[in-house]
Length: 63
Ligand SMILES: [Zn+2]
Image (tube, rainbow, N blue to C red; front, side, top):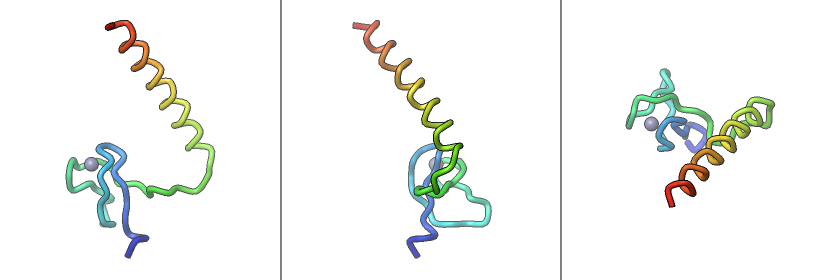
């Protein structure tokens, strides 16, 4: 059964596989929580790092 467990990329909640790949919590898209290594992961990681950098900058400017 665990292979049908997917993770929502919008809210991060786990959900069971369904034909629409739709999150039951927020309606977001469900993705495989352990994707194979491919270039898209690196692309997203870069955006994520950029996002956290911005967040950190905003936080430090507040104080
Ligand atoms: Zn969701």
